[in-house]
Amino acid sequence: MSVIERNGRPVQKLHILSVLVENKSGVLARVASLFARRGYNIHSLAVAPTEDDSLSRITIVVDVATAPLEQITKQLHKLINVIRISELHPAEAQERELMLATVEVDPSQRPEIIGLVDAFGGTIADVGVDAMMISLASSPERLDACEALLHHYRIRQIQRTGRVALPRLSS
Image (cartoon, rainbow, N blue to C red; front, side):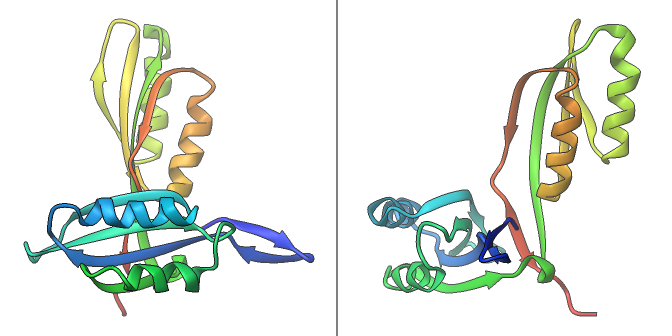
């Protein structure tokens, strides 16, 4: 979750919405269209079927600097295929993203990259003559930290998925 300063006080900028929808064609297009028509900025978007094949969960990380969160949820509730909307506070949610990155390395640098990937709990997905591809699934903050360290090498390509999140289990 990102924060911005307003009047010397931190204000949340990004919010996580978990939207349970009917698993039907066109639902994602309608949700995305709603955001586009209203000029709302989507920071991250991930969608997949749930344990019930008739439902999908859309995880939307939304930038509330472009519109108030209450306005966004009201607009989403108007869509006929939307079943339930939950806001997930980061302290009460498990968040994950996947990152794949291809990094240029000469053979002498391979142990460094392997050590870095191991430290973050990632894996080496592929090895070429002059490059390695790493895979890491973790919190967005850990991916940011790993990506920053990878910039000491030449990143050829990098791709990150949208964020997925579920509420934490109560103890």
